[in-house]
Amino acid sequence: MTLINRLCGVVAALAVTLQFSANAEAGAPQQKTQAPGYYRLMLGDFEVTALSDGTFQMDAGKILTNITPKELDAALARSFLKDPVETSVNGFLINTGSKLVLVDTGAGTLFGPTLGKLLSNLKASGYRPEQVDEIYITHMHDDHVGGLSADGKRVFPNAIVRAAQQEADFWLSKAHMDAAPQDRKDGFQSAMNMLNPYVSAGKFKPFNGDTELVPGIRAVATPGHTAGHTVYVVESRGQKLVLWGDLMHAAAVQFPDPSVTIQYDMESGMAATQRKKVFADAAEKRSWVAGAHLSFPGIGHLRTAGSGYAFVPVNYGALN
Ligand SMILES: [Zn+2]
Image (tube, rainbow, N blue to C red):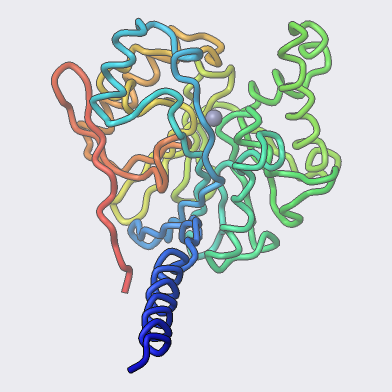
């Protein structure tokens, strides 16, 4: 073999090696998506579908109240979290067999691009917005009513929207908006933008106090976070699921210590009282619970733990 031949052999081998390592470096492209954000659970005869609207970064240190920075850091560290905390926004769809009921609608376009995915997840879960018969609103903050309308039109054209009368009286009142501080006026305007297309179509029907809305689903007044905050209790064949809305926001902090509050509470003392009452009831009755801001799918149980509670997320169920 001549020197030239040997050199050619070495160069060829080197080229093959470089080729291999280049391929290994490129690898398969990372996908960076999750599965469609829905999770199904049977509750007696009812089918419950948790729908993800997405997540947002919650600046816990800035907005949680009645807690010291040191206590907050310790509570987050115990749950392997750091501030800001990635926080879910969830809605819940209940098919009772005769009615399709959606509880809360996510943020729509009001909270930026990481939210507003509830509608696409509802479709991915096998339903169409026209099939929704009723929509129950826990309260009228942006991240709960933002998915109701788009460009001034109803996203759910056949649905009746229901919420507590006190909630409607507060957020849909121009007088209240005018009296609110400048930085709070937007909240009123967006509630009006979202609800008014239903109001003018005769499809908004507020209710008063604790009321059964369809067989198996009833509203329970829990004012505090807002004036007309409502939880919805779903029951079928002896099984019970309580949809909490915004009774709590920060699982890592408020389960161990339900007295921790949040700036957005209208009456933080009353909000904490409602939270303690509903937590105690859930732990005692061993009922299912679901939260709008619990990590998706946001469904599970509560048990007592020390002076507070621990949340046990739903065990995965294949439903077949
Ligand atoms: Zn919320």
